[in-house]
Image (cartoon, rainbow, N blue to C red; front, side):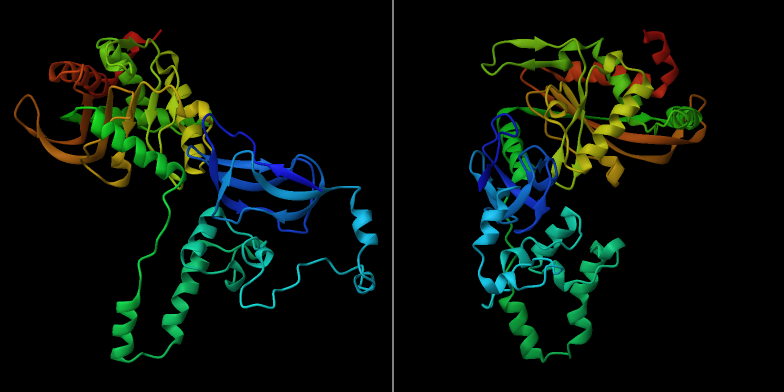
Length: 415
């Protein structure tokens, strides 16, 4: 019998939340088989089996906190099971060998750990979390997906059933139900806990100032439409984000202080030659800001490839630690969700962040005083006012805006 100890899974991480067990007690496991998914304060991590055997005990329940270097589960190494089988009572030996072993159901009102917490009904981590939030069990829900997989729609349909089946309660019953309903309490853990801590630190220690501007992206949208087919032919999806990033790297060459960082003592500025541009991603685990490294050296297609990879990883909660470190400036594309304006909080220790609003087709006057239909995007910068002033951010934004409004000028600066 061996205990599997939760290993070090990241710099400074001492605990993590068990998101989903892939096995139950009594299951046969193979070497490198996925055993459990845990959520650290950075990302979702999949832990695999070190060797083949049989799971004998799960020490940490789904949704609970596991400590680094503490036992996570116990297993019996293959080849050691014969001793146990000889010691089994005669009644167990008389059972049919064709029948798979399943845990005996609990005789108490509670359900066994294998039956309730570690059931093998196929479902995604997001669906399992939704089931836990409503105090349900996956075994109660009919799955409409492949192989009986429980989908989000199945859970919502199950929640609607009581309202459809139950008779209309009396007014007194409705009143008592409303009065007795308590709020759902969920512990703040993982990425959301880190976000809460970092945002409080940034907002309370960095003097923010904000600078707003409008950018006419009519020409940029037309250029992207012409280049989309070329990008798709190479297997890449071309959004506006690579243009935002490339133009930003070029503008930083004119105002390098925007890409600098103040040291912890507050008495030195560190100027970075590489532009590692972060992008805020609204993932299922919480807000993540992975960054594209060395944007100043990359082509638009290279940037598009990295943006696609990081977006997919972040939304699945599986971003590598290296992709979350080393950022020098950030972009928050709030417009992708429909917002036109936001006052972003700086991703410390960076010096600036820009929030990009949605693009709107609005009337604007041209140089001859004629009204034209133009694609207007509202952007808002937040800067660290300890060493960036209004004039600096205005000049930097004007350079960035110039590249985006006349994207062909970026060709003059490409190596």
